[in-house]
Image (tube, rainbow, N blue to C red; front, side):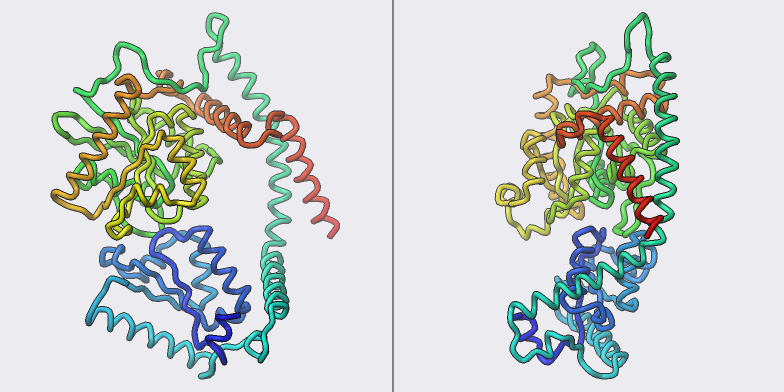
Length: 462
């Protein structure tokens, strides 16, 4: 109501602000709320404005948008008639003036394309707004948006329902058949030799702190894993550019020396964005295990300073699925873009956070966390690396001076079915702890099959 009153008789343009980087679920939700409040027609007057333009490192903004493989971002820009611009809010003087001037030109073009007038809707036409009127208009716009979304997805649902039903029947058959084969091949001397339990290595070949430290970078895509690896190694080993596309496509390993220790850093691709562990992901898991043998001393879970999103929560769950829940004892949470705190303490940022998911993750990892400014150089970079490496050494010592292993590291000849069984076992155990009704997998299969069958019937007779 206040927004409408302040902007009467109506805005000439809406500026939808988002940060350069990954366009997240929160951004999608924000765009939908804009259309709910101002109406779907307001897209004709909307300009998408990217902040933190300086993070592109001089690359053109239009190339960043053009090369993006983020469908949600492309859809929003298309809805806004491909009107977008970028700001460096730290700019001053002529640079700031130039940015504002170019934005104003886009605003004027937008007004001209809309007949030279401002935008209005039912709320602006009401001289005496009441809470009831606002509530009714928002509900109407929300319903209209959802109907439009459902209409666009209807044909896709029909096709997907048929595919899912067929795939589900085939999957049940394959799982049953392969499980029987796998059970027969994995039994030696009358007992199983493959489990899904993570542990700290206790054998005599454990690496000590005087030889080598193996670190694996984990976390969601676009969180800054590659840049963090380069900071640790003090050289550009991993491809790291701020784009909306995934730049790390496979597991890579880099090495350097730090205070007499050989430091091995493993950078990981998009293994942690979904717990749908398909063949491509399983192949990268196998590669990650191979390049980090006999086992990592520490997992570094990388996330960006700011909002801890649903994607970060999913990434953490995938880390526990892939390495086992016990790997939390060997995990350090590392925040990138710590410079965005403006000099405030990272400890205060974490302590004052009201994000329960972030607090839970920090607690799972034994309250081990630190921060990086991956743009830092010289003494600043060395100080950051020193802080991290001291935490790594403390973590290793707390785990008996040994590296972490799970059953995948103990298998000399890994194959896809072994990895699949391991991941599925860890995921099932995790989900059982999250939702009690998952204690009966047959019930889950029955419910899933029933839902799919119901969807097919409803669509068929609608």
